[in-house]
Length: 344
Ligand code: F6P
Image (tube, rainbow, N blue to C red; front, side, top):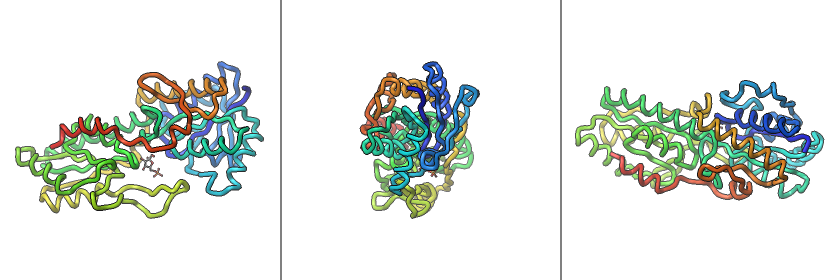
């Protein structure tokens, strides 16, 4: 093992740089050179790379984003692109490639490996959404939850002063992990998630009862992928990205309008948006990302290609990448049942 590549693909999240640093430092200890691929799979299509030396990763542990850049480029959108990825992997004389990504980026890794025996890929799971199977947590999630928790707490005081209902829309795509964790941590009065279609009558009933027992304000956390019982998810635009995803967003506004109309309580909405993806990673995410980076290099050294670092309990293990990308990991309903105890 002389030279490994590393790339970050899909939506960025806090902790990507911590993984890159960990990969470079661990590789250096083992006499391995590291090539950074720019902008996810796009960098392997365009052959855009940089050498990553110890100096390149100095000071990046607490930095959000990714020094390599990222993209949502899917090499399988165009069959020529997938061939270019393989050709450039060979041209750069990589002995292995560490792919840091979520379901889409790792899905491509899985497909590429199935089709090309010469590609040696190991994975690292990332996403603020925590919706990747075969790992208890992805890095980036904890930071997003901390940010959302603080925001919800701040909304409490203004909601209380003005006797208002505050609707907070959080990210998470089609899974309610961020909503449930931040809602539980910040004491939300209702948490609405994609896994359980919303019944507006029930939502308003909970809020009215809460007000009837003297609580003049309420906090409602809604995940961007939540939908009404009889409705569809709310999207910002119909256009699909290269992986066939819609751009979610807007359910908070619609929900707030409906709540105000039906309950007559003054209601405001806050959409946290990409703030959840930016900034410095939490200590938990820094440690998790660092452990994942070390594990990824170990997997490459042990020629355990097609595997991904994963967190199981407090152990870092390895699982087939295929097991992570097969199905979306939606919320653990036992946790949602706990959250429900505190509704209203
Ligand atoms: O997957 C991470 C995520 O932040 C989702 O929570 C969100 O739906 C999506 O990415 C937003 O994507 P973009 O950065 O393309 O707007």
